[in-house]
Image (cartoon, rainbow, N blue to C red; front, side):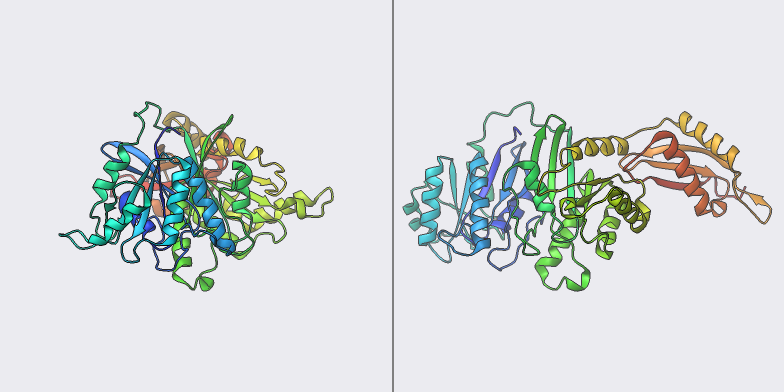
Length: 442
């Protein structure tokens, strides 16, 4: 993508995530005083001087560490550095210049990328803390004093980054990008699927449950289209969400669903649909998102000629409120049927965006009411006047009638099925709103 990419790097606990949130203007990155909370690269769009750019918050770089997670984090930060237009290197005035800071600075100098040095936690306004001058020893030019808590110095910091942005291109708007949230309970293979699609170790994959804590965005383009893949933290049962960071992660996954166009609901073929799966799928359904049910680890199942049909029936039974969602059987490990996902993503996104003229809708309505008479109650019959579409993603229809109390739920379901059988609308929920014409009865 043509937008500049600004990467925030530094050793753990210097305030990178707090700075990220301040620059983006929203609480996107989990901020806790536990080192290593931000494990994956976390992206967001920001704007400065009328120029949009992508900001990436990285896990802290801890040189020479033996911890598996910390070394993963270092690799993730290195990938962010390779892709960055400019790097913000954050140091901490309170701990002063450390040997780790010097090692990270050497790594950044070797990358050849422009680096802006930010010295954080300069929270007092007025005279400059003389300790800032020791950071000149890093050889990265003038340090900029900032406070990510209060926002001091962030304008100067962004101005320094802006100097390295390339000329604005006309192709920065990405209206045709489909945002795809990959959701599911922990350890169903969400990160493995994202990595399989991207062909790089984009998201930390480890068999420790809860490795992906943030919702992470990855841009991907192929011959089928342009996509942003959002890999979310696995959603646990509420009772198991005992620490604060996990609670943030569930909230983040819910937010990822909200900002997506299409949700891939991942289910483990070996476990089938669990109670937790129904809750995760319910979040996407209630948010009105186009959905695809992705049964993963299909390579690990012993099969006969009817295994897939039986699994499909089980999924349909357990997710009975999502009969509209197509089911696909894949293996993120081997890549089996992963390519087919893109056709389905495009298809359900188009279906969720479908607009139907009022004339066509009322033709279907007339046919449906002629076939099955509207219900009556105590001698009063429901009269349906007309129907119109008022929104997309999901398709939203308003039906005007004489008395909404006569409009039984089963008849609403019947009309929805008639609309679906005529226009398709596969993969997307449908919203029906019932309005009473005028305030008076009849």
